[in-house]
Image (cartoon, rainbow, N blue to C red; front, side, top):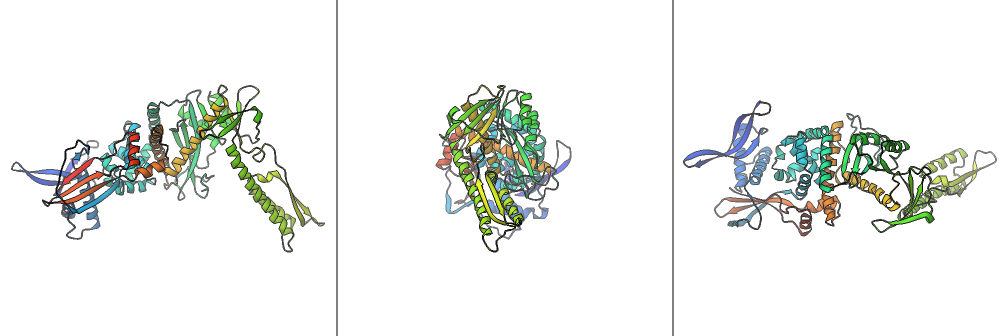
Amino acid sequence: MYIRQTKTRSSVSGDDYYTFRLVVSERVGGKVRQRTLLNLGKNFSLPKEQWQQLCSRIDQILSGQGALLTESDEIEELAQRYAAQMVVNAPVATGSAEAEEDYQEVDVASLELIRPRSVGVENVALEALSWLQLPEILESAGLNGVQRAAAIGSIVGRMAAPGSELATMRWLNERSALGELLEVDFEAMPAMRLYRTSDLLVRKRKEIEAALFSRIEDIFALPTTVTLYDLTNTYFEGEAASNNKACRGRSKEKRSDCPLVTLGLVLDGSGFVRQSRMFEGNVVESKTLEEMLEELQAPSGALVIMDAGIATCANIEWLVEHQYRYLVVSRERNRQFDEQHAVETTTASKQTIQIQRVINEDETEVRLYCHSPQRQEKETAMTSQACQRFEAGLNKIAENLQKPRGEKRQEKLLQRIGRLQEKSRGISQHYRVELTPDASGNKAIALTWEKLPISGTRLTHPGVYCLRTNEMNWDEATLWQTYTMLTDLEAVFRSLKSELGLRPIYHHKEERTEGHLFITVLAYQAVQALRKNLKAKGINDSWTCLRELLSVQQRITATFKQRDGRTLHIRKTTVAEPKLKKLYEALDISPTPGGIQKLID
């Protein structure tokens, strides 16, 4: 066994370069021929004087011997890697019941189990990407074979082990069997390849998103009449000084101490992403809708669903002008509800909702005043707690007035009451608070208050909210059930943030940040496709639960000493446990990814 260096020429650029191969000399029919055992690629950089040491160590590993001499860490790492690849590249047995039986006489005591790598998540992720025809879409977008492998590695890595691109590369190299399934050597791929592929994906974003959603529509026969729109933000670890879109703003994760960027998503009613875009971290939600829908070219008459943060009067006027239908959460503060003119509908969780339908004077818009007992219970508890805290604060101030050394200066007491009102989350508006001054007017002698609930607020109308729509032909139940799709959008953001590693971001460049977000969105599309198929089979688990179930399946190499002195290497996937097997059956996926490799040395 030795390493051969061969000069070759690039068919693309015409430049000469060297490639390296691990070869062995064999006598065939009286002639000596060289057979390539492994292609080491053009980036093989071990000094030539150490080649023989590497070959000897590879031979020792394959023959089951320990190192006769202490090798350097670099040689040992390369030897382990190349020996494992030779096992992986060995001929594949079918692994089926019809496979030819193969008996070997081995020393059981010599058994070693080496190189465990996860394969469960990788197996179903590749199947989902195959359904979506993402490899073909990437090829049509101009990505070559290496770039497609890097893109798929990043997407599957985000599904299996969410993290930065650097963490993904470590996962691909040290923990995952994805390279085996793709027949790609990720260990030979520089980490910069993932970053550059991320940049390329961003440049091809519109093309990829359009083709991907078109494919999703074909698979799931989705109607294009419903569009959900919302935004979320994510924070940076670091200052992100080189990113012009990284700005301070209101963080939905209470991380306003960090720079932020905002992700806007336009979704179909089934929860698939039609379009995504990165905005500045301090962007005003209401100013992004027109820009996103114009780029999307959503069909005329499509129903747009959005929450109160985006449902400004200007946005609603724009939707009407461009012949969109809308169903939005009203921004009006005054709550009202007339139970006598309401109808009842039932939620999926068997909760009763009462809905009062009110048509405006020119009959161009419907308002739905909805009352939810479940929401009422929650809001009543919140307001009760807020009232108790506010009154406790007032009591503390009043008690201090009776103490000899307690604060009595009216100016200071007014400041304390103001701070208490500021922290009350609006509950102070329902109280009339009075300080009784002494004869001098500089000090207070008493503090009194009276609770005066303001009509039309959460305190007087708990559990009530209002929806607005220009869809005049649907009944109350249909409109309300359509609005609940907005909760699916919230589930999307939860999945992106908590299950697929949207937060935090470690990049400093704007393009790299956008690439991180886009890879997360692509991973979400694959997860949504898997969950939609599983839901049709009665499996409604979250991706976190599914990932935990899939992660137990591994590929392992079993090594034995044979009676004839040779070493037998078998690389095989562990047997799927009952729950995992049920999952594979529901998805119609093979429970034994990768097949069986056998090598006798």
